[in-house]
Amino acid sequence: EDQVTQSPEALRLQEGESSSLNCSYTVSGLRGLFWYRQDPGKGPEFLFTLYSAGEEKEKERLKATLTKKESFLHITAPKPEDSATYLCAVQATTSGSRLTFGEGTQLTVNP
Amino acid sequence: SQTIHQWPATLVQPVGSPLSLECTVEGTSNPNLYWYRQAAGRGLQLLFYSVGIGQISSEVPQNLSASRPQDRQFILSSKKLLLSDSGFYLCAHQRGLGNTIYFGEGSWLTVV
Image 1: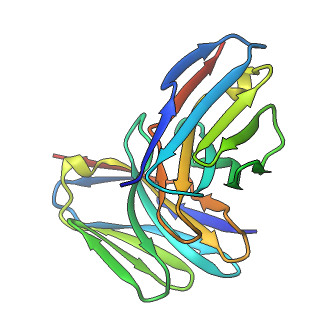
Image 2: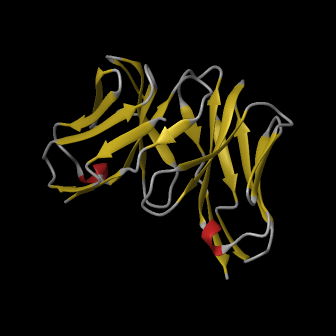
């Protein structure tokens, strides 16, 4: 069974204080790992897709990395507008179209 | 570009009443379509997914059903709502396995 665990559940940062969010996964074969940002009352907004270990992608203050067991979302010099819940999901080669999500990390950036 | 529409955005329904949430996708053909439910402060629970017209896979036995009458239309239904059906329902689409999955804006359902 595919499993995704995100940590921490909640994270409070001061503006400019860099940190990382973790997504650990267990699949028999990874087809893709997805990161999303979700604001309260909204649908998840796509950030990145990673396909193979060693891959990295960047977008503004965010950088996603991937190993064979986990992915990190690094946030550099965050701003209050980065406050949101960040979701990680995996699609496995043996699970067809099924996409399995973690519980998310709620990030709050204080000015 | 691909867009996804989901409606209604918000609804309040009495226990025992029927439900119909609709989702349509534009800008792509034969997408994979998904219905997810999200409880407050929690992750997304996959309810149904579809790889083609009339093809529905159910992930969780429950009071809900799904249908795909057209290539880019996905409907979530219930004949009789329960209090436990309350939540945030999200429709999503994917052009093909491994490709980016896009979500709609969601539908808030409150069963009273």
